[in-house]
Length: 191
View: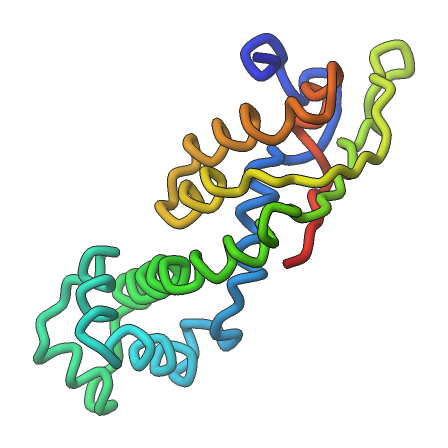
């Protein structure tokens, strides 16, 4: 695999791993509460999302929000405010539960009954790389039909699993130069 044999950025190239960019894009597609968790309205909205059903409460506990029911009730009623550490836990739990809730719908939209989704690969930035060391990399696009492993790793928050799924299921379909697209400035798709 190419990621085992290169030292990205050694000569000044800039970009991010494609799997990180895919995770960010999936988070954008999943949507959610736009108000920051640090604002009362933001953490209250997240708490209501996490406490509206027994299933959501169980998923929030699994995601790391392990406060007592009494504390949770005080937060929801507005008698107390969460600490900074608990705000972070609320936000992490919210993102995890939100991912679980939208995964099936998002996977259906990405798969489109086997037709797949068009993905655009914008190459890494080589403006700081000296001319003899620059690679010939250009904008590419292709239709991705296998999203199962990518979405499953994204839902689980498994960065390594997502990277493995992206580099073994998707990138090889770009052809012999697929290693040049492990790092990109952006990866774009819609669902």
